[in-house]
Length: 212
Image (cartoon, rainbow, N blue to C red; front, side):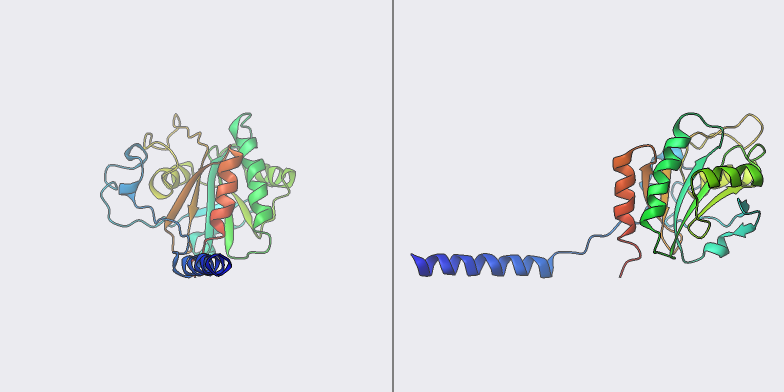
């Protein structure tokens, strides 16, 4: 009986070792427009084979004009908010402080929070808001700029809200969606920024990027 048990134990250990060697490394999908809810995608983009986030020119809460080139090669965590929001935005921003903490030792990740009321959210207003949440500008920018530019990014670059509206006076975006973008500008995930479980998943998924 003892030799049989030893043999079975040896076999079980060998199977476990083999599984560990052969199992695929965890990875995140590359999300193309065809993989995303069509309601979020401009009709002209729905059948595009590949997608990368669009260039931008915005101003961060330090008063610096910034471009996509300034975060080239970085993994991006992207959301849309406004400082006077009394509902979902404070929850999202508080949850993003957890992301900031998780990436404190990573210089390859940047959080980009875009104001959807850029006229009201001037640099000084954003600076005060950033101070309230202890934002580290080396890991997190709060952004303002032209409304049409920001709304174009939300709808045609990051696909975080319904593809309705033109960025005009009556247009308004209010979304809990947070997008994850890899260092090559490809969309890799969407998360509910108001949900703690989803934010924990985002933090975990950041550990899978960049791929080895």
